[in-house]
Image 1: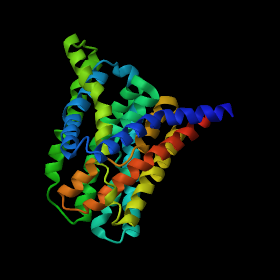
Image 2 (image 1 turned 30 degrees about the vertical axis):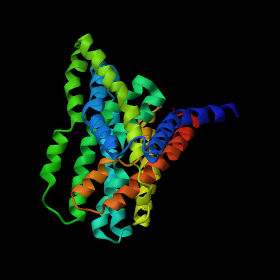
Image 3 (image 1 turned 120 degrees about the vertical axis):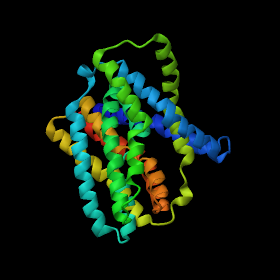
Length: 316
């Protein structure tokens, strides 16, 4: 009984605070305390300033030799590519509308690692989880974007516009901040105290502001069209993909923080950027919004369940 309660407490200590802040975002938006302009500006601030600052400060002050897990990152890249291929095959048979297949596939494999996944890891493991997740996030995010462009273009029979999104990947502020931090981590160069203190101010804003904006931007009215396709994508995102990736990780010997980061990153909901990309490319944006809403709410429960099971089995 004691082990059961410890596992339960551990799992809810990860998702509980996130659930509270998401609910607060929903409430503040419903009461018009914050509005669409706040959400838009806050989201841009997180993406372009505070999250890159968090990545730069955390990585630059960490020894790569001690913290970077190349095996975990390589497994994440290979696992993402394999699950993507499986989802493409599933969508071909399970999604009737060809133009919606890319939306379903993207929603099923593309995790919101930069906000929800990162928050999960910080709640679970503190600084060590943040550093391990940062390297994982950096490279797997690049693959997410490439595969998303490919599947959306293919399902909508488009050959163009890929170059625009490739430029977006290269110019991604999060990726750039991580690359800029790598030399400081590799050669253990000290940062000026003024830069560290200033960067920490921005970094500390990241997760609360990002989660508030995420909660406030959830649109429950969107849950009316294409619900079958949205449910298929959500089930794959919340259960099928995490179970496959975690199962492979266990077989390969990942344990403790490594397995926890893998589990939490793969259990994160569909990335909000997937909606932006679908809308910009003229796809079924309502379906993309449905998937985000379903997975954002569902992830709080499935991530708790997955961590509860792994902790109960003594793998974490």
